[in-house]
Image 1 (cartoon, protein in one colour):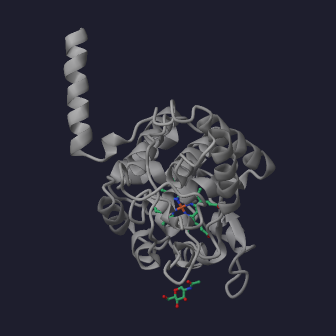
Image 2 (cartoon, rainbow, N blue to C red):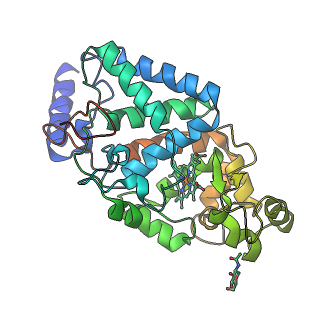
Length: 317
Ligand code: HEM
Ligand SMILES: *[C@@H]1O[C@H](CO)[C@@H](O)[C@H](O)[C@H]1NC(C)=O
């Protein structure tokens, strides 16, 4: 057994050299700073206790980081003369939130570790997991060891983050361009089991779509009028503070809020999986955790690439 283990170990070392994803490890901070992960969890739990929606916002922050040049905390960089901040990209502006919680985590983690050893990109990945757990969702061992970018790209953010008006082929294409498959698309869209969307992101659907439950459309119109209330919020699913499978039940009942939500159950190739998740919560939980790891593996900076930022909002001086 020992020698087989040794060969396996060599195999993993080899794979680790061959692909970047393998250089991330759940134990990355175990010896560098064992208090890092408990500290992040404590602050996320407090933030979610204070405002349940913050769990949703932190999950989305990690997603929008990973989909733009990989999970490198580029989304956290504030605008400067040389940084065209992703915060100003269309999908993020007046929409993405949670930056103050990340700042607080970074401050506390650097204090408890004694120096800045935990990357902002890893903080985003752990905070996303802890948010899901805090709202009743599945847990997983977050792969760690990402480093932080020294650049950001508003242009790339506009191109790479999927739009709520996409149909199924466009969504599949978008996820494929990030190395994620149809199963990842459906499982990760289950992130919409928590949180809110603004009226302008779903107005065209509730007024014009035919693949929508009429009473659901009427209900949504009450707080999303045709020509005003653009930023009014509606929950992405009926149980927006609990990480459950109500999102998938809604899709089966034509009560998806965004065009991109209902696209997953609209007579296409993902219908069966949506039905499966709506019937078997354990299947969703298992796949969601797996797909979050896949998403977290998108193009991480490792080794001597990038840096460990001191302040998540700016490149080190
Ligand atoms: C499949 C393509 C996706 C599209 C087109 C999409 C689009 C959107 C839109 C338009 C909103 C509302 C933003 C606003 O009105 O301010 C939203 C919210 C949200 N999204 Fe997505 N999303 C997608 C995938 C994901 C994924 C993969 C995750 C995480 C795994 C995620 C997590 C969330 C969460 C948690 C919220 C609520 C945020 C809050 O309340 O602060 N989304 N999404
Ligand atoms: C509904 O569709 C019509 C015709 O395409 C369009 O002119 C109108 O702006 C749409 N309404 C909404 C709310 O999107």
